[in-house]
Image: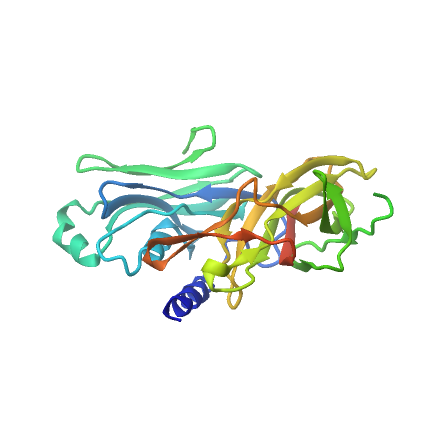
Length: 153
Length: 154
């Protein structure tokens, strides 16, 4: 019964987000995929789309947090992508380091790197784009690549 | 194929559909499967189709859903290709549990049929709190919605 309640509650919560595809839109669409990589069993780097034209969108960071709720310090990343209209827009992309538990992030505050950037471009119909980046003490960068590995400037 | 009635699909909205025991059947890969038949609007060049497939129960260990496969036909009802829905994500819609998948549409497609795949080309995976992951069991019958994207022909 406990598992049933959690399943229902999480699926209901997931329903609160708005879609990046506007109501009534029938134009072409593209896919933007977030990326994430584990550094340790409880620390990972996340590179994701956070806004389209200023409107927040769901992303891999939220999906991973949701998937790891109740697991203590452990943090396993999950895949995440979404469809977007294939037309010019300003995409806010972010890179962030996160931990399985907030207390770990507080203790390691000095190495919880983050970066944010805005990229304006027109995704092409049926193409897939990936948010990538690097987060180290010396370099903090986030960018969007197309499915051929070409960086979108 | 010409005896099949193809229902026009509206633009800019989800068309709620379902596969039931009463749905017509079509043989593909040596197996008869239930299907719904749809027509792409005249003058519209479809590029992608998004399908929301609804879970039979929100209790994930027992959940199943139609894992859609689409058979695309040209203007003369000749089969162009069969493509499974891919890139599944958890459906983010209030009050309904499901998954959303996408299919890219062949350029010359004018009609398509939606049928239940057997999952051999991949099934949706739902990640749940506590680190559990559940593969959605393919169902032969069930409810789903279809939305078409593309451009008006010039």
